[in-house]
Each structure stands twice: as C-alpha cells, then as structure tokens.
Length: 509
Image 1 (cartoon, rainbow, N blue to C red):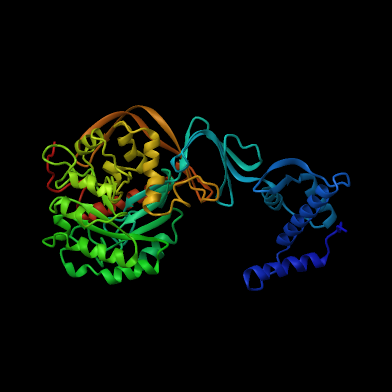
Image 2: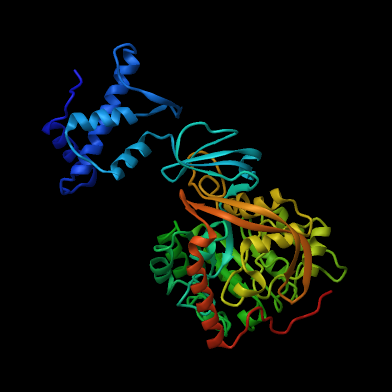
C-alpha cells in the first residue's frame, strides 16, 4: 500500500541513509527530507502506473529514457505531494526536483559536431548530465534543464593544450592560465616541466587543486624545474636527478604525465644529450614518457636516437637551428625514422619556437605535427601566441582542414597521454568537456616567433567552453583574463625580457 502522507518513519529513513553515505552524522535537513520524500513518491507512483496503468498515477510529459532509466515531468505530482505532506517549500526545491525529473542538465543543440575520436562530423545535439556526456545524437528531444542553441557553430571535444607553463607566482615563465583556458575552448592544459621534483608539491597544491581547468604536468628532470628562465636549468648537471624525479611521478600519477627536458645550448651548456639520457632513465623507472624541447646547439639526430615509442618532440617547427629540415630543404631522415617507431611531434609555438618558413615547408612535404600546442607563458601571451585557437588558425590558413586541426587538439594529445577514454572525446560517459567555435571569414594577420607575418582568410573564434558540465562564455572570465595579462606584464617588467623575444635569431629561409 502506497502511503498518501509520508510520516516520521520516512524522515528517519532519509536521515539514516544520509549518515550511511557520509560516515558521520549530519544535521537533519528539512529541505533534503522533503526532496527525498518527493523522489520516493515518484518512484512508487511510477511503479504503480507501469504495473497497473489504469489504477491511476499522474504522469505528465513522458521523456525518452537514457540507459533504461525512466524520467517523467511530475509537475502535477509535485503539487499534490506538497499538499499531502503539509510541508511548505520554496522555488529552489521545485527547480531541484524538476532537474531530477529531466533527462539532461544541459543540451547543446544544432551544431556541426566534429569528434575525430569517433569519426563523427555532422550536425547534431549533445546532452550532458551530472558533468558527463550522456548522449550524442542527430536530435535530442528529451527534456533538459538548460538548452543552448549553437546552430551554425562547430562543437568539438574540449581542446587539450599539451605544452604551456602555468606555475604562476613561482616561476618567471608561469601564467595563471585557468581563465585563459575557459575563455578559449581549452579544458585540459599540460604544464611542460615548470616544476621539478623539489617544487612539484607546491604546483599540485596551489595550481592543480584550485583550477577549474584540468591541469596536468610533465616533471622536469632538473630538480628546480624552470624556476628562472634567465638561466639554463641544466648548466649544472647535478640538477638532474632521475631517481627522485621518478619517485614523485609515481607518487602522483593522476597529474604527472611524464618527464621534461630542454635540449639546447642555452639550457644544457656543455653537457650535450646527457640531460636527455637522465630524463629517459627517470621515465623508464616511472613507466612514463619524455617530452624533449629541441633547440639550437644540440644536434637533432643525437636527440632523436635516444627517444622511445611514446616520447614527444616539442617545437617541431622551430627555426633557430638544429631543426627538422636539412641542407637540402627537406625533412631529415632521422625525423621520419623517429615517427616510424612511435615518437610524437608537437608544435609548441612559444615566443621562440615557431617559424613560418619551416612550418610551411614541412606541410608542403606532408610532414604534419601530431599535436598543436601553444607553449603559452609570460613572454608569449600577448605576442605571438595569444591562445590555442589562434595558434591553430595559423595551421588552418596553411591548408590543414578543420577536422585535422581538431584532431591535433583533442584526440591526438589525449592519445599521447593515454587518456583517450575520458578527455579529447565526446564518448558517452566521458567528462563533459566541450568547445564551441565560430569559423570567422575575413582577412587576418598572424605572426610567428621570428616576427614574420602571414595573412589568411580564417580565424577560429571561441564561442563557449563547457568544463565538466559547467558553461563558460569568454565574457564570464574577462576580468580574470585581464588580471592574468596584468601579472604577465609585471613579470616582463621585472625580468626586462619583452614579449616575443628570440635571442640570436638565425635566418633559415
């Protein structure tokens, strides 16, 4: 027999369930009790209606089920229940109950959906519930608490920036990137070695934990990380500590995704590839990958020889010297050999590591990067990088199609990180990380790290970002972005290194 009026036993049961869930006794919450009663009544009424369709039970506005779960709009049932309980409530409880009966918390409708992880490219809707992707379909008709029409726009998995420097306040490179990500479609950002083993705990506590964006990091083989960009972190080889580097990566595998090393004359002094050897040693102990920064002063073939399947070369289009093109203006054989055995190549634009001449020639020869990333930091923020969509727009205007751009900013970096099941995808059950863009047409000017400018007809412009089900428009975080820019300018003033500087630029074309 279904009781018409819930009694004290129902309230006690709800209280006891709350204690059981939390492990500690919680203060009795009248509103929570009412909400539980409403849910119980809906469940009972649904069961009675399904078993005895003619016996009664108010069921209004049937909604399609998700994974076999039936949900209905019980507006009238709610009104009757409140009357029967005799307990007064407010609009917030009404809204909460309505959300419970809806199939989705959020539906994004009408966009062109591009998800390379599932070979999807076509118009459709995406439904989100409890911070997860609940449905991707040509058309979603089930109810949602919020529906946003994104017709005429492009919807992709949230973008992943595989190379940035976000240890703000503790390093000269670091910027507070959370707001910048949420304003530009980036839902996961990877710090490329700002912390070493000595200061990793601070990075996790003060950068990772409070960030709304998913923040991951490579741990630098240098114990001090990139504390001071004015000095080479591996000039003193004693800074390279494979054992302790591997130990901290193993302690925090959720957020530590590999070992970073920079291999240029400025960074390593006279030590050649010895820092890389130690980085590989640490990576093997921690069963992870290496990301290696290539630069003038260390021969690229010597670097590539030491890399294993799954390792990452960043700054693949840098033009300062010891780059991917040989004297014959063709990609050197060692680069192709490295790719054949599973080494990844990341763009990593930065203030000094993207040369239009190198990039355009490589694209002409069919050598595309695997990943597009920014190398966003204090000195590249204002110029020449700005954001991941603007960096990607440079490749779009070189002739890469938008689906390839999305692949290099979603499924490819997710694959590099071995996290294809939960980021860089719109698979049902994955985290609801989504980017929505406009493709603007006009005349746009872009600048590489050497000051060379190119014009193009297309710009990828962020419209909104969804991070774990929460919607952010660029205007929502405008003040935070302005504060990030102000702090970057402050560090530029302290160090005296202007935006976009390259020391000892070498003309390569």
